[in-house]
Image 1 (cartoon, rainbow, N blue to C red):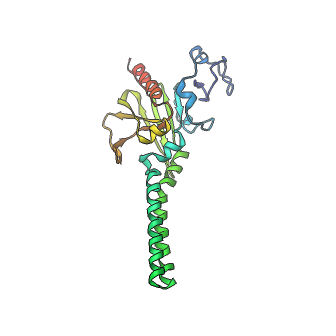
Image 2: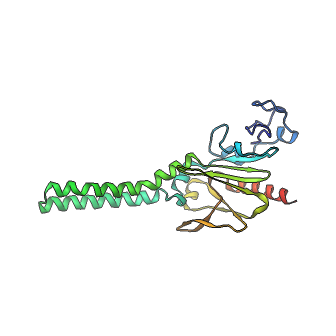
Image 3: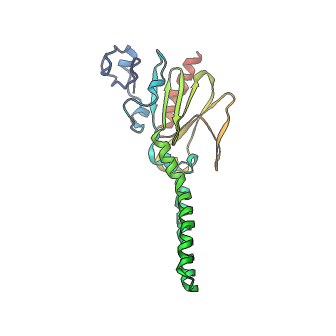
Length: 231
């Protein structure tokens, strides 16, 4: 979906002027078709949190957010798989412990005294998915003709700006959860990158565009932008 170079809002690609600010659109934007990847990105606010970071004359090529369910299940935030495995184990342990207390005739005080410890375990298990849900609300991606901008964070915000001429490699990662939901992640490696988020599958590096509906199309848009920057 093309964006107005003046205000950064989406334009339909059918008119000569931006419906928001009235700026006359360049011919290539006014006639630009909607890309497949832009039809399938998860919906997000009309303005977008990253628009305010655009420089004068910087043109938005693509922006979007992750698809919610695969993002919540993703391993980078702990995911729901830990919850799905841990909760039955905790419940089974609680049932065994309660039945043992009843069979041995232990006092109710011992039974009640153990409830806070069970509550602590349940809360610890629930932290990861709750944290990932909070991250989802603040996660947004943008590709411009100059930079890649990513933002995420549960409480605070982690906003990263990568000049396209600093990118060394772009690849697509499709994990088990992605295969279930038809999504994938675009991983960007820059000069002197630092691994920041170890996972069971290896090491995930930032910036990464997680849980995208059309990851290969987004990767193509990014690679084309990098090529144009270097030419």
